[in-house]
Structure formats: structure tokens, C-alpha cells
Image 1 (cartoon, helix red, strand yellow):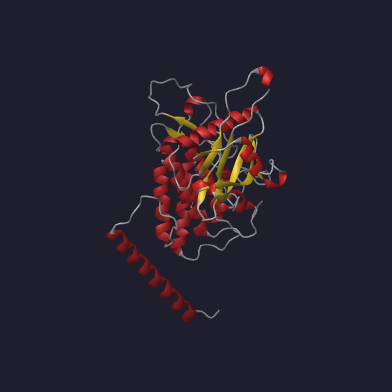
Image 2: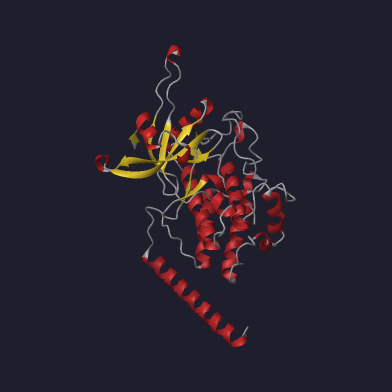
Amino acid sequence: MKEFSYEEVEAATGGFAAKNLVGKGSHGSVYRARVRSGGGGSRLVAVAVKRPTHAQGEAKLANEIAVLLAAPRHPSVVGIVGVRVAPQPPPAAAGPGLPPLLVMEYMPNGSLHDLLHRSPRPPPWPRRVEIALDVARAVCALHAAQPRMIIHRDVKSANILLGRDGRARLADFSLAVRVAARAPEEDEAAGPVPAGTIGYLDPCYTEPGRLGPESDVFSFGVVLLELVSGRKVMDVNSCPSSIVAWAEPLIGAGRAREVFDGRVAAPPNSWTERAVARVLDVAARCVSDCVERRPSMAEVASELHGAVESAGWRHRHVPRGYSRTVIERACRCIVSWGQHVRRSKRVRATKIECSGAPD
């Protein structure tokens, strides 16, 4: 990781010019820039620079930098390129110091929120489940971090960015916290004040002492509902306005098809339909009112991987360090061959028997 000077980053963003602004939130703004990297700094690379817009934003960005530096490196967590750490506060007479800056890898394909709600071509089913699996593995890695787990606290589609390589990456760690496993006798009031985004925020997370990985699980479940339905998480023009209140009863009544995004063709066969329904079943468990009934993120990732496998989809990204055994590869080949044969038979039979969303 590189330490940048303020002047270096300022020049790379054109003086934080409006033309280079790619995003703006309540705590800061993000700019596109090109900085020198590689051996000897001879290569220009595209990056995103996050700059706070007020004092509270400075504290949030300092927290984000600290969490990212402590987080395990994962291909589905936005990569940190470098930082500009704010020095100790100057004497009062010297005026305010320069703010901290975070330099991250640039995600040219926008966010999942934009893909679902603003793109003229909504993503197909395999792509949706692939994105879900990427993010599930990222959150799982954060929860497994040592010596303290990382709870993101703001898992939502706007914080899921899409890289040039097609992989989804979890971003914006300004609300994230590092926590140790709490013993039963510890003070229930310990922990940060509840925070998050309306619609994604766990309704059980109402007091500081109630923060746990289950809060991220709930938020991820909302993202799954959003991915499958293409519906806004909070839609004032719909009744009920909450995606959870709308989808949960339909899933529970076995009416999963009514939750599927109507802007894209229905799953083309029974096994792909079952795979999407399986994703919805996982989502329903994640958003359960009973915290104890929610699965861990490891279980969620396993279920989503199973959905990809059962549908015959190939997940393009294999996690670093993961290798398939000879037996597993052979089994995958046999299953793939069997599905190919069934598809071929279905096409031939059809030829014989028949001739003929929201922003």
C-alpha cells in the first residue's frame, strides 16, 4: 500500500474537479483519478479517491481506512491502493489540517443498484446469482476475520460495485466496526450506536448491544430479494412499501414466481427455476424476525454455490486458494454432460410435438 501526499492526489483528480466526481454520499465524495503505480511508479492506473466533506466525514473515513487495513484481502472486497492519513490536529492558530484521503481500485461498471434500477438491460438470472455469491463470500470473509470480526453494517446494492473483470466487490466501510465475540455476561450496552440504511437495516438491531453478524445477514437477505425481484427496497408507490413485507408472505405461501423480476424472461427450465427459488428461500431465512433462525454467511455462501451448481451455471470466479479434487472435477463433468443430454432431448421433443421494473 502506498502513502500519497495530498498534493499528489489533488493533482491526480484535477483539483477535485466536478468532471471527475463519480459519487457523493452523506460523508464524502468520490473522484476518478489516475496515479502512478507499479515498479518505480512508471505506470498510470485508474483509481477512485474518497474525500470527506465535513468533520464527521473525516472521522468516518478514518474509520474506513482503519477497517480496510485490518480486513483480510479478498477478491470481492474493494481493493485499497493507498492512503493519505491526516496528521495530528495542528494548533488552533494554525487553522484546520488537510483531510485524510482513501485511494481505491476504480470500478468502471458502477453499482449493483444502478444495474438493477437504471440499466436499460436488466441482468439475466445467472449473473444475478453470481453477484450474490461474490458478495456472500466477501461478507463471510469479514465475519471470519481474526482477531476481531468485521461487521459491515451497510450492506446494500449501492455499496456493491462491479469491476472490469465482472466480479462484484463490497465497498464503503465507513460504518463498519471490528468486534470481538461477546461473552454472555458482558454489558449489553456495549457497542456503537445503531446505524445503517433504511430498508436494509436489521429491525432487531435497535440497541448497541444487539449488534452482531446477524445484522449483516439481514441486510444481505434484503439484497437477495432486490436481486431476484428487481424491486426497490423501499417503494412508496407500492403497498406494502417494504420489499421484505411484500416478498416474505409470497415466498412463505409457495408463490416464489410472483417475486421474480418480470422485466426478464422467466427461468427457461425447471432446474434453473428451482435455483432462483432456492435463492429466495435463503433470502427469506436471512430476513427472519427471529435472529436465531438466520443462517450464518458461511451457510448463505454454501447455499448460493449450490444454486449455481444445481442450475448448471458456471461461476466465473474461483476463490483464491480453492482447488477442486479430481473426483469433484469428474462429478462436475458427469453432471454437466447429463444436463446437456436432457436439454438436447427436450429440444428435439419440442420440435416433433409442436410447430409452433422500477427505477
